[in-house]
Image (cartoon, rainbow, N blue to C red; front, side, top):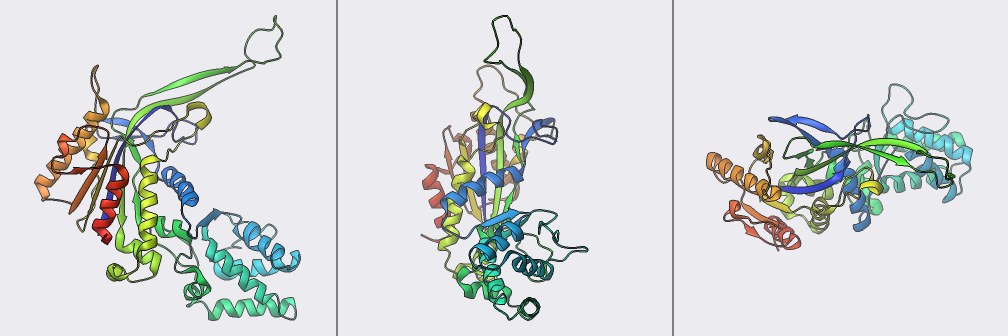
Length: 388
């Protein structure tokens, strides 16, 4: 069972996602180069929104997990001395992370690269280290920790669950977007939510914006700018595509086998998905927020659900749209998507069991698809998957 979401969103002059040179990200597609927003950028902003709106364990993507989370809490909350805490945390890091060298800097406890850790894992590690710290001396404490890590290796996630954290050991972010870890103990999560890079449906349209800063304390005879700079701005109408593997997502939340996902209590999954789908349609990615206010919501959203193999509808724009005076760009984009969907269904048969759209435009090219408000469309989609 898959849930697919297609959106069309128009942004005015903005810089949604920058490359290493500070320029708008682009990529060739079909007959033209397009503006692009990376999936990593999109997911970062959705995660931020979900953290504000969900009452579920979340995660920390950081290089400073052992220093600023585990060690800090061990000293502040559990009263372990700084030197003793440092030694225990270093032993922990070496015991749970595979590395050719040291998994963390031995002086700062900083990892070489950011990694995603769940708040439940942090809680568990702090409690485990506090327990070990009660041993008669540091040597005995480190020996106890090493033994616990060795003997509890296979039951680590079960222990997390018993501690009251359920299966969201890596937070809901890990359950949604996956987590790769090089560890014998930490569990890897496969991503259940697959996110494509957003692409403009038309050729790249950018312009370099030159700006100056005037010194407020200049005297009348002092002319010229105190500073001059530039940035690349683009405007675009973007197609965005997301696919969700429902059995895998339920498995990530509940630890069940994916094949028995329908038998699970999916309340948290539905709550999370509803918040995610709403965020995809309404949360704006964007650099230069203060200078461009790039806030926009999707003018078109199509939800599909069914057991058929997912497929993007990006090829509706393989031949880029070229707009002329009097055109309604959003309407043309909606019509192009609807026409391509009809062609795909004509070739393969119906490629989804259920479809519902939300749009500010005419939906004639999407004949037979019900149109509703965004909230009602989300509810209708989730009810079709999980039942009312």
